Length: 105
Image (cartoon, rainbow, N blue to C red; front, side, top):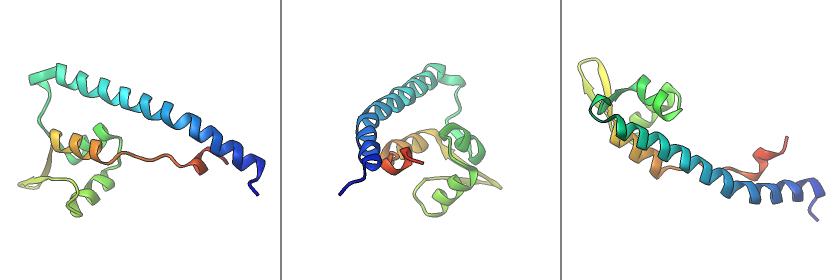
């Protein structure tokens, strides 16, 4: 038998998931369209730190993804550069799933 609190948490998660997903998509589209409007002033290559700031991920996570060859990067001298389009493609191809357990303490 399902506990009442667990049932409520699952019901709440089922209601909130599509709302949160849509809101995140809209926010990402606004950020991407804002970046597109910036045009020529926007850099086409990012450093690891800039990629982390742009994506909201940590620097160590970006380096791990590069090491695992999940995110393309180029080394120029001592710098590691990531194409903005490669970062955006990676983020769009790997959405984050929200679990029902995260809503309950």
